Image 1: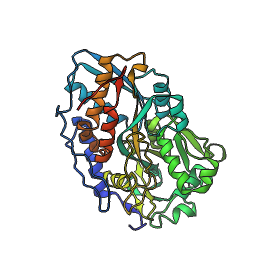
Image 2: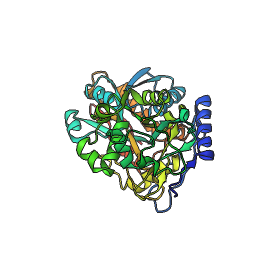
Image 3: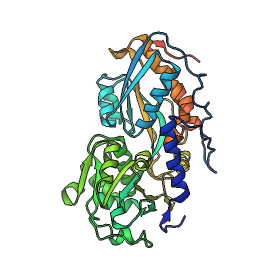
Image 4: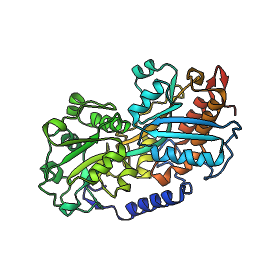
Length: 399
């Protein structure tokens, strides 16, 4: 793929159209996608919205509380609405407070499930004995920017490398017309304007994926900053860095700041009509985040999942069309739910059934919100995990 700047044209219009339809209708038809050539996975074939084949009706009314990542929040919140239509006795409330908050709350047992884009470390798992992780969907972290006031339309795709992105967030590249950026975008006249680097101010799985990518492609970043849900941003002290809460906060700050750059889940960039960059992948191609390029990354990086440990890293995946800042995002639950004082058998069964529905029928809602449905082998591993869930030793799901 050429490194010349490209107009997003048809691809962007199609994505925006899909998102608008999803917002208005609340659901879209499932978009079937086959595995790319040479890939090792296929996307699970799921019934369309409204199909109740995997839903067990719960007679006793229950309310389930979840909290965590903002990255998958549009999808999780869609699930809560759609599942309640199928099973009115089950009300699910999800609070998008960031991956860090989700990890803290599920560890403290103040919610029934957590969500995080960052897979828990061995130390975190040790501190929260009994927690298990299951991938729920796939997404991409978009590099987004606002240069419209300088005459560069948000439909213009700028090219970035990991080294350039790291340089910006380390405060080493401070102007948009820096030769390192200009060299990647010879057809665009970049302004002599300061770059405001917007980042998350809260603990964030999106930050984890973003910094995980930078750590893998830039040795200085790996040594000085590293990767985590929360890091110390050099740009804050040596240049112009701004923190914002949640993906929505970062997207909103970029939208309201001339010359800003940020990193968010794709749907947040599309929702604000921001520019979305192409990032050079491991094969040397500049790739924008789309359903196909995120799915391609997963197909080339997931390998054979282990149901006993589903922490999966897919940043900087091999493959000509792999988007390099792709990531799984996770649901966090206790394997024996009776350790949570808020749980009873009815709620535990309802939560397990909801999660079973989410990895099957619920995947049909993912493409319309620019998430990739789980590959079949991840679904299979998730199934094994869900079948192992218990309440006081009693299995919650039998199939």
